[in-house]
Image 1 (tube, rainbow, N blue to C red):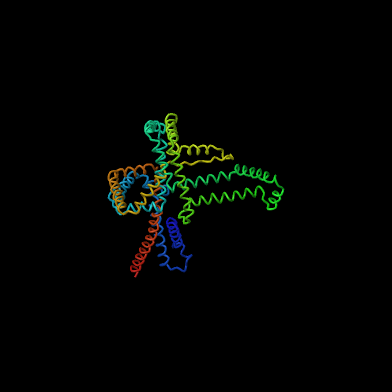
Image 2 (cartoon, rainbow, N blue to C red):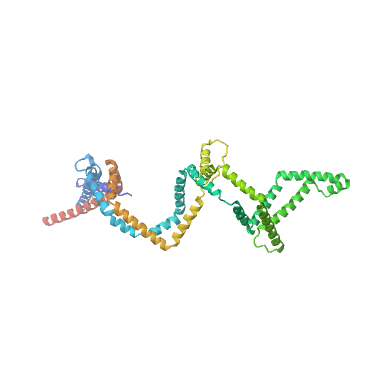
Length: 453
């Protein structure tokens, strides 16, 4: 039950009690003596007077009780003086620079930040904020101008590049055992995919059918034997596929398995890796190959539109422009359209590195008391400086907020915050009035009794 309802209930009970115990209607309550009736009447009557007086006082703070305008609507009529007092109290006492700084010193800002990272999805939000900021910066970059500036430098350096050194470096990497095995495994995998393709399978089936007819043409017995063992064209193709699958998968397993213990498999993998390395070295050391790469470098430098390539590369990997364009196209598609647009999301090339750096720095901060102490002291020093420099702006901010409210809005706002608590004044007024009324009656009754005797 709200205090206002309690206060109204107390006032109604007091008024009803005062009416019910009036001496003029005492014959209606013959069971009560004159003393008891008078005592109750004075108590209820005083409680009613006290409750009404306090109701008028509380209501007069915000409105015109009973339409009386004299000395009422105190908040509205004294708005400027009250606002000045509120601004002075809040800015100089409640939100004084000293109080703010003392409260700030009692907090550990590093722990607050760690809690934000660990319990409030702060890590992801920091990543999003930084990524969005970098994307915004990157999206405004003039990639055409950047490409135009970089191109002459790259072309100038390209003429000094020794193709042989690059080729030798690439070959040295590719011919290392672990790399050559992976390359060979991918080659065998590609061969296997080609062999299993529909085109190759159909060609094999036709070839098997041709060979079968040629084989059976010389002897009816051969056809009889093949039919007897159910060796059809599809059966023969299945046998070939199974053998090829087994051979290629076995070779790939030999090349890619870790910790090979079978000496034959180990020797086979080493030999394949060695043959592949020798092939690469011999082919790239050939004079014609060297000449080809040299000519290719000249053609690339003279005919390739390097500036346009750099611009497109920056648009795709620095700005993720293609993805943004596809998103725009998707938004333009009619909602009822059955067409499906596949978006190729190309994240900015720097995004993964930036997120990894953020994760590392956050982990370092959480694990380091030294960094936390430095951060805490830095933040407190920074905030203390800001508070001292800009504390004078607080009164202006408070006054600006209060001045933005009309008289009605301000009255509604203040009444909503304190009116329910002010109702306790009415309740206390009724109680105190009742007590005083009873006390005065007792004193009066005692005096009359003594005087009568």
